Image 1 (cartoon, rainbow, N blue to C red):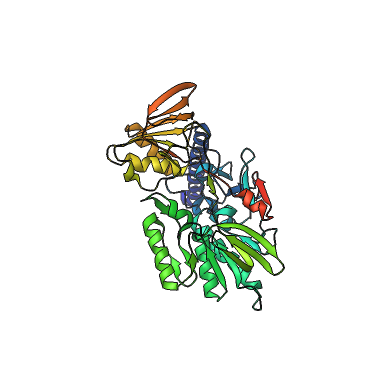
Image 2 (cartoon, rainbow, N blue to C red):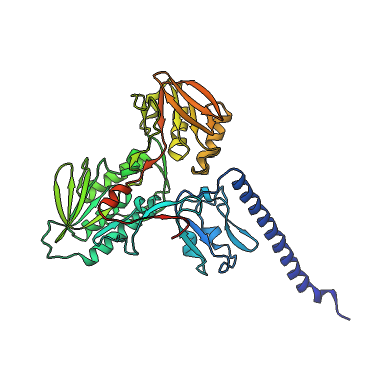
Amino acid sequence: MESGIDYLPALLIAGILLIYILKLRAQQKKSHHVLEQARENGLTEPASLHPMIDKNKCIGCKSCVYVCPQQLGHHVLGIIHGKAELLEPANCIGHGACKKVCPEDAITLVFGTEQRGVDIPQVDDRFETNVKGIYIAGELGGMGLIRNAIEQGKSAMKSISATASKKSANPYQVIIVGAGPAGIAATLYAQNKSLKYLTLDQDSLGGTVFQYPRGKIVMTQPVELPMIGTMNFKETSKEKLLEFWQQVEAKTGISIHYQEIVANIEQTESGFRVTTNKGEYASDTVLLTIGRRGTPRKLGVPGEDLPKVVYRLIDPEQYTNQKVMIVGGGDSALEAALAIADVQGSEVSLSYRSASFSRAKAKNRDRIDTYAQQGKIRLYLSSQVKSITEDAITLDYDGEKVIIDNDAVIINAGGILPTGFLKQIGITVETKYGTA
């Protein structure tokens, strides 16, 4: 007669298996709930680069779920019916770590969706456009994340360096347009490789980062910078990041021409002629690391040309004791509203044409909800600005005309992409609808 002890291993295995199944069901139930919540709240449109999962290849190993840097406090990726699923598309920041860890190559990083296209310049795996000799890296190519932009800037310059001619008749082997994260990384690489380079920026060091409001928290990941080593920021302020870039500039002696706007790029027999507001330069190659914001998008309403209307926030303190209307639903708009709401005596309203802030980060959406509940920000969702006067702003709010007392207006409706400029110099721009 067999003793009960003989059954213990089987019972132990069955118990472990039961616990695993129950845990898996609980996780899938939670993933279902997160996905349904995202759909109900209209948060189904990813802002930029995001994963597309091939269910035929996915084995449900959860590697992508665990590696996602946005999982803390959120559920960007999860498992449903044994397969990986993008649960919160609006919270995806395009980090790309999920693709790298997938053992079955089931993840493709894509731009846009079937419903919303994204204009992306055509580049190959060397970051060269269809115009041979012109390269694109960073935000313009869809890589808005600082770490990714830096990596692209380095990689693009590596490609340029590999084919650079040492006997060129041109004064420069490469002209870098833009001094944001991608442009700075490219400039450092060029100097480290002793390339004859020229870096131009229409504003100041930092590119888009320089335009962020005072005190904005910037998210990034550790990354290697040429000549510097590891840039070990994870979360820092705009001011500290710009201070770091200034220290890099001083330490390395890189040369950047500021306040110089590129008007045209023309092909020549020996390369390219770059025309700016200050002169002309000849180069073998050109690397574009400019931002995607381009010219601020205007509303086209009466009164928009009043002095009180601006298109970006610089210093929240200037709105002390003022009634301020923020127009827009992206991160820039939400962050501007939050910053001004903390200023003494300010009264902040936020107008957005949609019913939810689907294109903003979850952290900003959560804070806006909190401020709205506390009465620090008044929300006008599903509204449109109809006119602006010296002391008021008129909205169409759910079909009703609403007039609000107002001292200042900040319009954060995005920018008109530099598509016209790119096409002018011959670069093909593709509209991506969920494609790589």
